[in-house]
Amino acid sequence: MSDAAPNAADRRELTAAQRTAVTELLRVSPVADELGRRFVAAGHELHLVGGSVRDALLGRLGDDLDFCTDAHPDQTLQIVRGWAEAVWETGREFGTIGVQRDGLRLEITTFRAEVYDQVSRNPVVQYGTSLTEDLKRRDFTVNAMAVSVPDHRFTDPHGGLADLATKVVRTPSAPEESFRDDPLRMLRAARFAAQLRFAVHPDVRAAMARMATDLDRITAERIRDEFTKLLCGADPVTGLRLLVDSGLAERFLPELTGLKLEIDEHAQHKDVYEHTLTVVRNAVSYEEDGCDFVLRMAALMHDVGKPATKAVGPDGRVSFHHHEVVGARLTKARMKALRFPREAIAKVTALVALHLRFYGYGRGEWTDSAVRRYVADAGDLLPRLHKLTRSDCTTRNRRKAAQLAADYDALEERIARIAAEEDLARVRPDLDGNAIMKLLGVPPGPVVGLAWKHLKELRLERGPLGRDEAEAELLRWAREQGVVE
Image 1 (cartoon, rainbow, N blue to C red):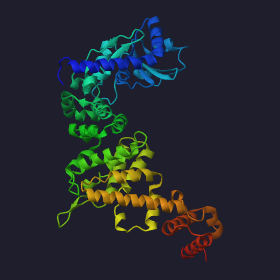
Image 2 (spheres, rainbow, N blue to C red):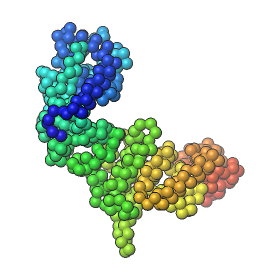
Image 3 (tube, rainbow, N blue to C red):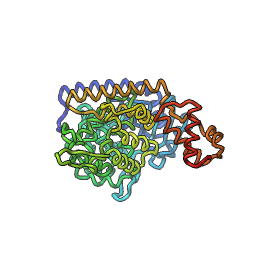
């Protein structure tokens, strides 16, 4: 992108954006202007700023609004006391006071000159003295615009409006200076590319590549949160490519970069890396109600076990035996390192472990027992497993793709049929713990658990048993185990 002024077409886009912003701001202005008047009366200034102005210009302003002010937190608290319906101070150490009013959540932050000490892994917050200083320290030009309230003066010292019109991610100051202050901004640039479908300016991309190792100064939690937003963006593949190309992925998700080195066994894709990005894109297309992070993460990690399991046979064919097992282990370790919640780790890991289970079904090898186990092992993840398995079919061979789709259609129909007959969603032994204890005459303990597990295996293998048959099988097992005479 050049530094020249916008041309006529760009000016038309800017005019349209400004009209959109006015419409959006009018919706929230009664509250925003009222708050602004309180600050002015107290001798302070207040500006709608950052993402709120950007989103207003994009016509997507939400109910969470960001403001900046020259007032310090204690002064802000005095100004909003008696006016706010609720106040929270969780961000006070960063100069932020939260306020709720008329269904809007407002965050009011003192002008800042936020910097890193080049050693610590968290920002050092210093209060600034002017709006100009505050805007210069922000991450990108499209977030460095402000609208004062209540008088609605528009401030854009770094050309954010023009960058918004041309959909470019650029930094207010030199990229190196911006990233030195907060290395997480490099990851955030990739997130903006994914969320907003913006192009990252070449100077910014070059600085990301040169400074990728600086990301090591950032805590795992902050990286996790930014990466989650990227993966849940409208175009996660663009963001993922930028992470790999810049070297950022190597700092916190090296498994993704490692996939570039491995040729896919089907020889239909450039490499496993390209196949993986296609699977992610496919998974997004199967979503029904916004981002499904678990599904997207499973799609991203499903083949990370391939590099460690690659083998070349005597005939020159490449295989990756048990890569799903290795991949599940690597996925669990990586997500733990990034401090993801246990529930999310368990779900993603299970999907990675199960993603190959379907293959072989089309050869007619699956019994009803195998179908029951497939459903039981997937549990609540079955709908996601359906989507992941279908997403994993990326062959360019139309005949093969059609056959795989038909096979999976047949499997889903078979699951539905058996489920209707046997309530597969709740596969349980035909006798519960109380019945087991009563029949065997044993107290609660390990024997009951072993007996329950044995009956569940029978249930999966043979389907529902009648009460008499279940009791007979239990007694037979108990005699073999020496539990009863």
